[in-house]
Length: 226
Image (cartoon, rainbow, N blue to C red):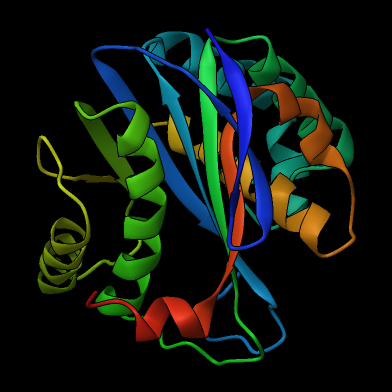
């Protein structure tokens, strides 16, 4: 498996030659589109053929963090935002030992309050999926249940399909339906922490990153129909 680098929008990204048939990408995001105090939105994908192994990571992490600790932190399940640093490190270290690839795209919001719409979110997801599909053309994609309304999910699917060519329809699930999505949340959270100067947790999974890039929102939005 060869390795190298390339530059996208002045950001150097690592690339590897990969050939993995029958792969699944699990996607989630960290950061808020409309919150002007959130400077980035990070979208991350974990690509794997071994979903069962990844679900074990979540179960083990959950067993280490007692339910009363979760309740005190305001959640029913482990997420990046409510996990103590020790759990974050444990999860990322466990991920680094698995047969996965990580793809991420960070959207620099440029001080914008971005509407959390199917069009805008679909544009961001499409940008990440373009990178994933360049390595895995036959890819099943499982995205976090970002929109609760069916019509919004359908509109989101149309936007993404216009942006990139998928081999099969998108699958929408929340982390309670598929625990691997929780791991994508951890990856996105780790990248966001690095970008905002709140920690270098992302170093723990650096060797798993196939593509990682930061792009500005306004050029992405203006060029959306090209």
